[in-house]
Structures are given as structure tokens and as C-alpha cells.
Length: 344
Image (tube, rainbow, N blue to C red; front, side, top):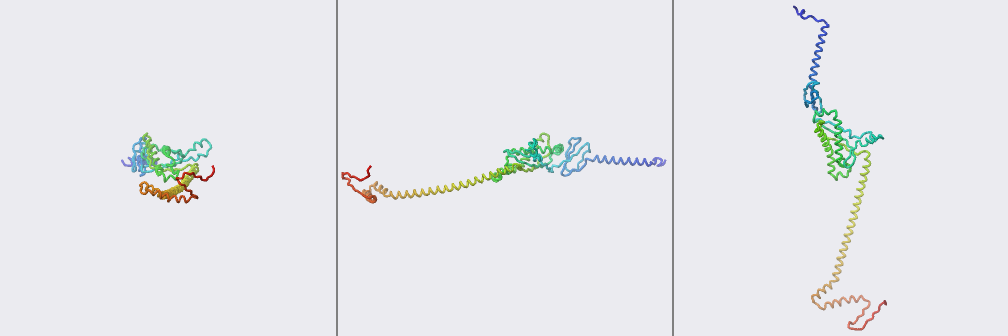
């Protein structure tokens, strides 16, 4: 039997069917290979992969070649790597554009939007930007749909908590004249970002302890502080009045110091004049009584009994010389002396 008789020649239609079959078979094999290797991929250097089998977490893998079962057995989700820093601007702290433009109850509800109350009952506006890293890829992938809303609430709560523990001067430079005088206040102002980052991390750790971790950690927080626009003019007026009051106090202190110095100079001059007059009067008294002192010393020692009579004669002449008329009487004469005088 010949080969032609064992394998009959196919007609054109059969050959077309045969070619179509092989074409479909090749496509099926290629599709099967593509499906089997669909989860064989390269993970970029700044990313990591989370592998889940039928929705259950299997493993996490960093940069490199990933080999996993094809869908629907295993699914692979790419998330940012731990070295990659992500940024999120907190829009809930921004001032609502519609605040103050509507004359309704909604306007009253939005009146306080964007304002944060400080510990000394002050009001300040804070704009925060959170920079974070992925610390737990599986938790991050699990909470990805709710991550932005959770970050908004956590950062807003941390900002309110941090501002409530501080006064206005420790948040921004409210009074410039105190910057140089109070170095501790300036240090607290510089520490504000660190305290805010610590408060945010505490909230994230609390969620992780409650088995609701977001899978992120805080890298840093950028914070911008400012006064409400409606309070700037009033605050500037207060600062101006404080500066004017301090200037007036300084001028009053200068005037008081000048008055005190003049009074001190006058007092010193009066004291010096009194001391000089006293010394002069003492010297004059001593010179005028020197004879009496010497006479007393001589009489006390009984050195010269006739000294008293001589001193009397020397002194009485000068006294009698000042009188207009002198009448002498004998002490032993018993007659009476009638002196002219004015009638009573």
C-alpha cells in the first residue's frame, strides 16, 4: 500500500480547517503562557509588592523579580517603598472660600473654618503638609482607599491638640519685642514642628495598637502659621499701642532718672554746705572759747590765782567800750541809785 493511499490528500476546505485549528491552538498556548506568567514582574527600586492569595495576605517583597501565581489565585499590588517619601497637603485646615460670603446658618457654621484656638484663647491659622513613608505595605494597601481621609482627620486632630497646649507667642512671632528677651519662647517656637510630628505619630501608633494601622510613619511636617486676615489690623493696633506705651514708660523713666539725679545733686550740695558751715561754726566757737577753756584748765590746776582778774580786766574793757554811758558804783555804798527809765 502506498503512502498516498494511507493518508489521503485533504481538500482545500479541510486544509483550511486544519490550519485554523493549529492557529487557535497556538493562540491558546500563548494565552496560557501569558496568563501563567502574568504575575512574574520586576518590582521598581522605589516600590514594593504585596501578594495576596484569594484575598488573604501572603507576603511582601521589595525591589527585584517577583514570581507569583496568576490571577485569580494570587493578586499583586504595588505600593511605595519604605525609602520613598510621600507628600500630603492637609486641606481640612484651609479656610473655606465660602466662609463669610453667605448670609445663612451655613455661613455661621463655616465662620470658624481654618482657625485653630491656642491655649491662651488666641486664634491662628495653620497650613500643614505631611511627609510620610510606608512602614507596613500590607496595612497601607488595605487602607489605601481610606488613607487620605484618615490622614486629614489625624493631622487636624494633632494640630488642634498641639495648638491648645501652647500660647500664641510660642506658635508665631506675635510680639517681636519679646524675641530677643525670651530665648525659651523662641526655642519652643522652633520645636513646634517636632511636637506636631510626634503628636501625629502617637495617633498612628494608637491606630496600630487597635489593629487599624495605616501602614505609614511620619517623616516630617511642614507648617505655616499666620494671623486671620480680619484680626491683622486689630492686632497691629494693639502692637502699636503697646509700643507707644513702652515708649512713654521709657520717657517717663528717663525723666524720673533725671529728676532723681538733680535732686541727688541738690541734696549733696546742701549736705556739703551744711557740713562746711558746721565746721566753720565749730572752728569759730572753738576759737572764741579757747580763752575760757585755758582759763578753766588753769583755775582747775590753781596755777595762777590772779589769772581770772586779769582776764576780767582784759575783757570788760571791750564790753564797756560798746556802751554809750557807764556809771560806776561803789559796792560798799548803801545809798540807792535812781536810774531814768520809761514809765510803765
